[in-house]
Image (cartoon, rainbow, N blue to C red; front, side):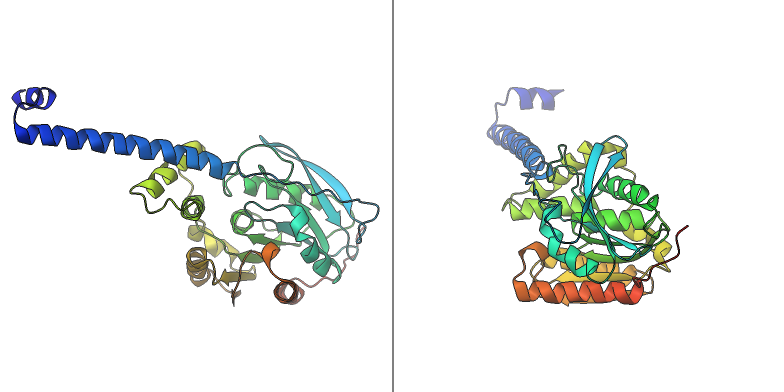
Length: 312
C-alpha cells in the first residue's frame, strides 16, 4: 500500500522520475496505438480506381459476367472466351490494382485459346468495402469459379489461377480447398495477411517507430477477429500435391520475395521457381512485360494445356 501511495503522491526523487517515465511510456503506447489504428484504416481502404472499357469495341469479345459473394454483395467480371471447352484462367489482381490493368496478360492467354476471367476484389475498382488481404478475397475467387463452372462453354473441372501479392494469397487459399484448380502462378505470395500489413507499414515509412508494426498487426487482427484461428497457408500446402505451381520472386521486393521463397521450399511437387528483377506486372516496361507474359503463358501451356473438351 505504501508503494502505491508513493507512486500516486511521489515525494522522493526516484519515485518522481519513475512516475514521469511511466507517464511518458503510457502516452507513447497510446500515441503508437492511435497512429497504428489510423494507418491500418488507410491500408485496408486503398484509393479505388475503376477501368471502363467498351465491350463492343474491345478485342477478344469480352462478356460481362455478374456473380454474388455471400456476405460481400455483387461483383462483376469480364469473361474473355477461348477455345470451347478449354480451361479457364482466373486472374487475381494485386493490392491497389484492378482488373483493367491486367488486359495485356488477358490477351496473351486468350491468344493461346484459354478462357480468361478478371474481376475486382473488395475495396478495389468500383467495389466498396475494405481489403482483408486474402481472408475474404478467397471467397470472391470461389464465387467467381462457381459461376463460371456452370457455363456450357468451359471445362468445369479445369481452372488455373494467377495472382499477385493479395491476389496470390487469395488464389492459394482457394486452391488448397478446391479440386477444380489444376495450376497456379503465385507472384509475391505471402503466408499470412498480417505479413502484408507489415509491408504496408514499411512502405509508409513508419516501421522504424517502436512497436508500430506490432500495433498495426494487432489492429488488423482485431479487425478480422473471425479469422483469428486461421492457420498460415504453408500448413496446408500438402493439399496441392498434384497441382503444378509456379512461384515468382521479385528481387526489388525483398521481403515478399523471401516469404515466397520459403513458400516454394515448403510446397510439394510439381513446383517451379522464377526469380525476376522487377515485380508488380502492371508497372513493368514493355519488354519486361512481354517476357513476364511469355513465362506465365508457357507455364500454363505445359501444365494446363488449352485443349477443348466435348460439352453436351
